[in-house]
Image 1 (cartoon, rainbow, N blue to C red):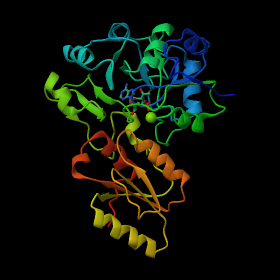
Image 2 (cartoon, protein in one colour):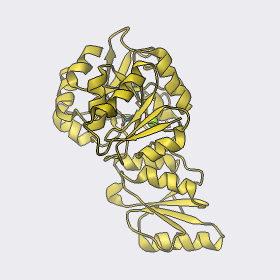
Image 3 (spheres, protein in one colour):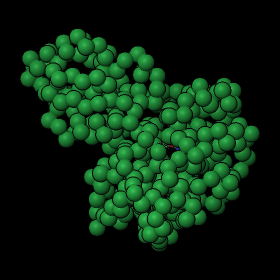
Length: 328
Ligand code: TXA
Ligand code: MG
């Protein structure tokens, strides 16, 4: 039912894309790789196709989807009141892991793409398969991450297959994604612009270009502006605890848990042979490691982080997976 096409070595082959393009034009879904995570694509102008995205993922319908296009020129056809700062961001970071929230031209996208907001999040992905696909399709593609809602985002075609087998007709397999964490979402409709979701493109990089930007307040705050931030994400079945990446501290924790007959998984950039399960920790491997925790028999997960990792996008995802709990 769900077919996977390996595009790794066929990245320039026409027939690789023909099926994908036909499916989207017929209102079906196609999962495809981007540099951040795999997306689950639908024609953003077709409300019935977009409905299928929400259904396949089990996603709440008040959470809008990101629209993917092949270039800045295409993006500009779909938005209005575009600021000079937004143009500067497009020129500097596209194609790339930055989603810009701007005012959508009315009657451009199906209402369920934007959850009936006046704005739309758009980006040009930096991946040859995504770009080849979008160029041939000539339609804007609404694509959230191609995972079941609440599961870690997919960084490999296998993850998509695991979550969506039998629910979608086609997965384009471009191998493991390079970044591993979803794009930075930057709201250009406020002044100064607001980072709604941290990602690979950092606050510092954006500020160098357009001056000061704000980081949106903690997702636990009242009404989050990015609707997606209010949902619990990336939570494996076993509880996750953050812990300082200090060898003796982590080993002490493992021993304490072993005394209580708990099986422990450790996520860290350095190996812990003392743990029952060890999975590597970096932006690129985080989601795969969280999925592997779910397939292991771990009763508890220790995510060992060091100071230099604490402020980046990976830490944002990890804190949410741990529900901000530190091991003590
Ligand atoms: O890297 C990515 O961004 C991946 C790949 C596939 O491009 N996509 C992705 O999409 O992560 P999704 O749907 O899982 O996350 C979209 C995020 C959500 O937090 C959503 O609330 C926010 O972007 N968003 C989308 N449109 C918005 C809008 N108009 N205003 C505010 N936030 C918006
Ligand atoms: Mg997602």
